[in-house]
Length: 169
Image 1 (tube, helix red, strand yellow):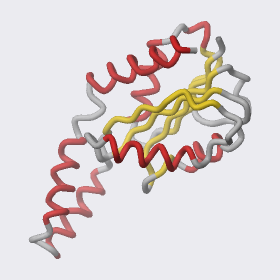
Image 2 (tube, one colour; image 1 turned 45 degrees about the horizontal axis):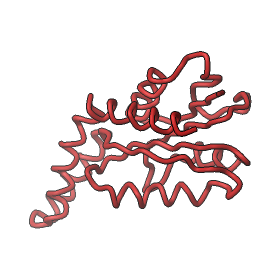
Image 3 (spheres, rainbow, N blue to C red; image 1 turned 120 degrees about the vertical axis):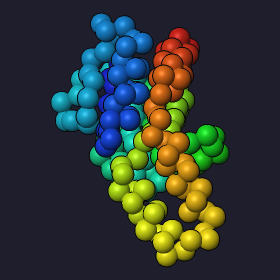
Image 4 (cartoon, rainbow, N blue to C red; image 1 turned 90 degrees about the horizontal axis):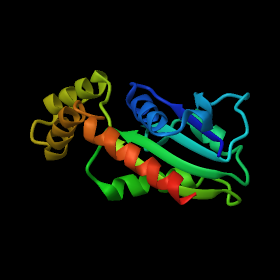
């Protein structure tokens, strides 16, 4: 089986997951590992990952996904908000809109990832303007929680996920 791992990473979170997936797979099967590019070798399975950019995958990943036809695709992602499977389902449904119907979707995996400090700075500034905003307080707590991710458990779960995906195919 030929496998391509294609990903975009903004804060190294998605790259950490991509490397964990790469470690779990047989090196001889991996024909490509890296950012979307025009010279990606043909593969049987495309494992595609992205950080979450305004509620969707990063545009270079969406552009790449739209070029695929009659392929097997497994998707992974990182997002600043975590512990909410419904949120992850929503994120994947947005990515799925860009996947041509001729492709076979093998599954998806998400985990929380740390966000740039500029995000917390924005939350703190907003809290100064709206000190009683309960949603902002939750956002700051979530930001602080996200600093710990991806952690060892996230990497372990990513490896388990890809093993189950590959073993089914």
